[in-house]
Length: 188
Image (cartoon, rainbow, N blue to C red; front, side, top):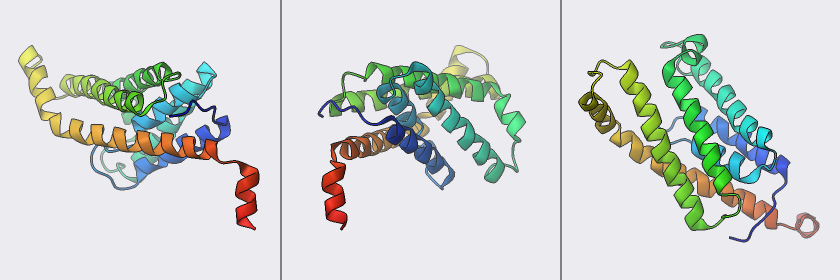
């Protein structure tokens, strides 16, 4: 891929729009979460904005998910005070860090590696949180059993990461290649 410098407004708009894809029915863990974090780290120059935009997008979509979809099972307060949620946000920060490492390596293989690494990070961190809160023994074998039970979700997460990473970065790449003057002449 050609090294591009996308406009910040475009990247932020895509991140915020992608966060709402978490609200539509989807396979478990097949979401744009990693792509959102990777885009923040890879494409937003200001460190605080690179962290803030994906985290705020996740917070807003989490609140809406709890209020509109999961309200029968958990409240917003319960969700945000759980250890599992804290660990999910820790994994988001790690994914932003992975995105930061992609800043100068915007190739197809680098994006695939970033999406795959994000799936592994999320799998390890989130399933550790599941183990802390489930009824399996708090032993090494209990932890391994938790990871074994999470394998089907890992496959969905990896597929979602790859799909959304290539989709969102592809949109940014394509939009950055379009000359607005030429595009306007085709609209007439």
